[in-house]
Length: 194
Ligand SMILES: [Zn+2]
Image (cartoon, rainbow, N blue to C red; front, top):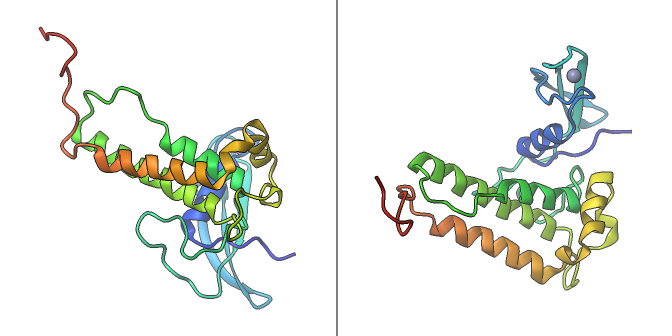
């Protein structure tokens, strides 16, 4: 069986982050190599777990034509992932999109990081939307093939409707665009400061 297709390096790295060692560590000091295997270019990551030392490795097939993702996108084009399912992508969006309710006191650097994370969250919702057939109102059941993805879907299937997804993507984008570039001053409207 040929290894699964990773559309971009970012997608391959995200997948490896989502599949830690049995000891819980994700870092395995990977070195990568590319080889032609049965007419397909296969990228192999190998190393030893930083936590427990056991050998770890991943293999991904590369696309026939390598294309760069534009802007904040995780992958170019409209084809859905073969590596990370729709439920897992929404979990990625939740992770990147999580932020404190109160943003006061954030420095310029923190605001820039938060804006990047929010755009990554919006792009992850984009990846969920790629699983929607044209005109379909919701992501089909076949788009959830992992245990983790199925759990996300079952816990709140209504989140995978087209309208909800588009609204979530827009909310992340809007929040990222509204963040003041220079940081969020502390203490405004919060009473007096010493
Ligand atoms: Zn380990």
